Image (cartoon, rainbow, N blue to C red; front, side):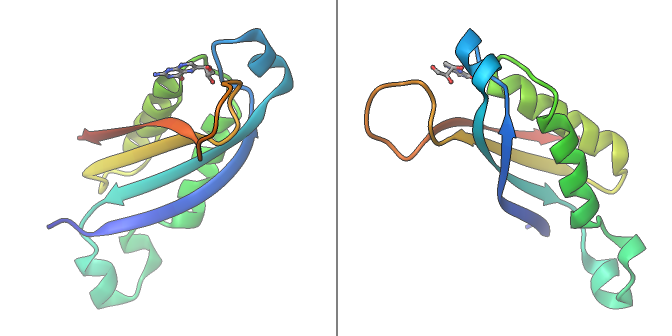
Length: 119
Ligand SMILES: Nc1nc2c(c(=O)[nH]1)N=C([C@H](O)[C@@H](O)CO)CN2
């Protein structure tokens, strides 16, 4: 079982979507990220440089969320690519993106996607 760094419920106001109104008005997105890596060394040494700084990971995710895409799948793949490029120690990642208020009539908590990628 792999160790995890978890960033849950990150909220961003962004402009992703297949409809022009979404690209123009924007909406709230919720991102959950799970970074899988070995945390043994950080646990033993108490040194930040032996792990992934989740504050820095947040900023990388925030930067990707600011670049508009049509599909949530594309946003999630961009986030994954950035994290793998930035962190050699990252072995796998799960990214979930939810739109709580998309332009879809009905009652629901949200719609979205989740991807899991292994290096
Ligand atoms: N699999 C997906 N389906 C849809 C997406 C998406 O990103 N992935 N997006 C939309 C619209 O942008 C949505 O916000 C409103 O219908 C539709 N389906």
